[in-house]
Length: 468
Image (cartoon, rainbow, N blue to C red; front, side, top):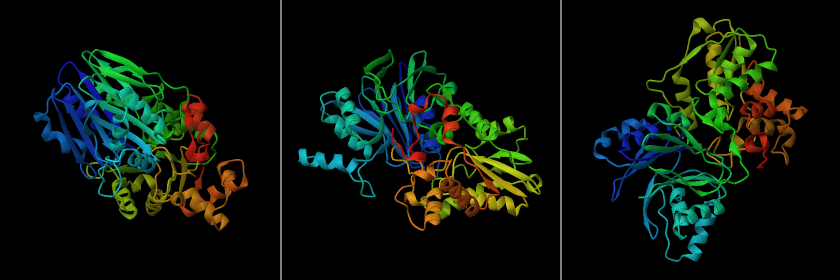
């Protein structure tokens, strides 16, 4: 997905930008970058973080970088931040989101601006952040440019734009990703994740609304464009990829997961010896389930993090499965003869979870019951880089539907409704294919209630295909 962080300060800000950006490492897998304004120019650095942590890549550079304003990013795809010199002046820019009509916007630029060009990536695609900078540069001010980008982009795009005056922060027009302001004496920061605040000495100050634009300077927050009325924030912030100590729209991630797990337990009657969570994002849901059900929480396997800290980086699915298997170390003495229930954030393709369950059976577990913290994923995300697969047909739910129907049906609406026979058959098919003792998904109503900010504000497209 990616994450953004920026600081404006009356003193040197490099250390804060470095650690604040690093605190977003759980959100991206490809590139990490920082751009610091040094008073007359930008000092920018971008590194590949696919197999090396962000801190290790940037640590040696810190002593040579000085400045009072800076931005950083962890990116799932393209190298950024970018530095630009245009008629609007010098600036650095970083974005997070997914631009579905990137090629169409680029084609329009080619047809109206004959001299324009875009630098291609090694895969032959256009850097989305560069495209946003081109949109901005066609306008007469940063405000007009950011508003134009919101108007043109289909999908989502939140932006940090660092100028010699300060940082422009523009949240996606439907608020699919958060931007949160922290404050301490002499400094302000803007972050995708509020978990960055406490250890850097910041406290919560303000959260941008959907489509809102502000200018952050060491003196304070200047409102540039007001928030829009409609919000569609991604539910997976709480269910999966948000950090447990982060809070969005007033709801903390860990609190939501505990509430969500408790709701899972209320509707369950399975007989089990232990509740556990698939590390890491399943743990909060499992603790909520355990507390509600009064069944002990335990750890039948341990995640080996010293060298296997991240399993979702490799592009090859077989290698991802191998890494996932290698980093989970079972404890046979706890597993043998036991009926275990695991909460997981979701089931995407299901291949890694099948590997985990098979590992537990090899350790002589009697039963392995799975309780995903959200409904079956039936649609690939159109708005962020979550649950992105080479094909929507790779989703475990879609594979089950095709197996049941013999082909892809014209409509899958009934498979999204837990009250239908089709839904129950789909879940039973997934359960058998992945070798679970039982499988019961969270329902969308309890999940949304656990988030607690109002259903109309939450995007649920992955589960029901509804955009608004």
